[in-house]
Image 1 (cartoon, one colour):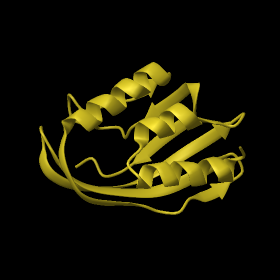
Image 2 (image 1 turned 180 degrees about the vertical axis):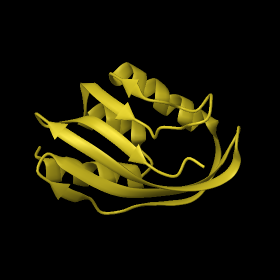
Image 3 (image 1 turned 135 degrees about the horizontal axis):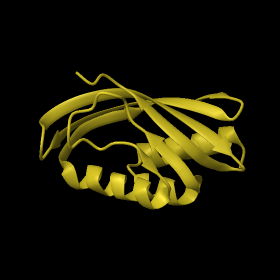
Length: 123
């Protein structure tokens, strides 16, 4: 798959809430996941390699009590990179109800996502 096909498939799976399937299907084993600087102690941080990224995803989903809404934009593709705007309104075990919006940026190499980075307010 090329970058546009991968981006479209990621958006499709995320809109269906199939994050684990997206990781399994679309990510390279050497992928990295980068969060914003300045996160509070105990927050999910950066992860390197698919085992660590899967664990990060598992911890995030286990913390969700209820999802009230959300959205995933169409992707914007440029070469080996693409970005997607995502939003979620959810109640978390450790934070209560918290709506969040972010820009997610991805890099594709050899037909797999190898880099994801998230941009959102930390205050």
